[in-house]
Image (cartoon, rainbow, N blue to C red; front, side, top):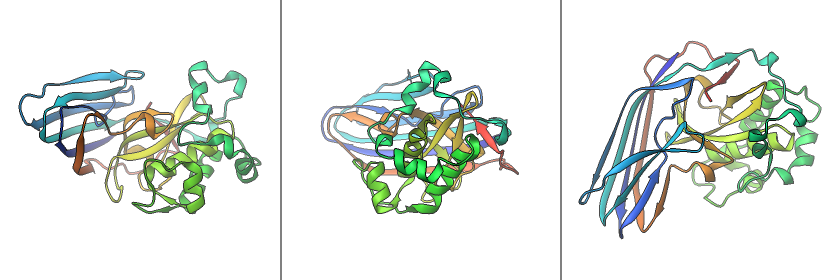
Amino acid sequence: MTQLKICSHLTYSVSTPTSFAFSVIAARTPFQSVASESIDVVTEGDAPWMLVPYGAGTHQLLRLSAEPGELEITYRAEVMLNGLSSEATELEEMAFADVPAEILPYLNPSRYCESDKLGGFAHREFGDLEPGHSRVQTVSDWVTDNLVYEPGSTNSSSSTTDVLLQRAGVCRDFAHVAIALCRALGIPARYVSGYGVGVEPQDFHGFFEAYIGTDWYLFDPTGMAPANTLARIGYGRDAADAPFATLVGRAMLRSKTVEVEAIDPPSTEPEAMSTA
């Protein structure tokens, strides 16, 4: 088991009455629990907030409406990770005919993951490899080795093909490339937003999961955070489904800080780990 101490802080200048939905709350799953947490909201006037379930229910949104002025959101939590560990060699890819219906959307191309454009490349690079966890790990390692982590090199419109052309990006881009390559190989894959130990520069982290065996298994193609130090917030087809903030109105993000610390650092990393 790994225990993480997390703190994220967001500051906005709000110009008009604005409604926000923040995705910063650590998820509750059978393999990830929250020992303690606090939410502090400081703003002009009264801004009652609520936590609402999103998606499958493990993901929660912090929702509020703010009047013009300064808005500060501080989230603190202690998160316990007790992931399902498996032998990598025992995790096989599932035949398309056997993929559960609710998993099928994670085989399709999406806004940022243009898997339909990468079929030939993916099969040339990885098609001859033994299917299973090791092939997904090879895809993840290829992304680690062939992309440069470069803050500011991409923006909210950058897709997988853009990132592959310039061979640079940030964590969400690394995840998008790995997801697109997996889907092109017929492996269901999805984006996960969360917190990670050792991420540099520290920020909300993006990584991915592949559906192998009968569970979702974690991979971090940036190579910065071991799977057993990744705390999940939410997931989706790509980062468009799991932004840290969505708003309707006019507000500008002034500052964003994230701190993640392992209180009891794990001594070893499991071969394969799921926290879904």
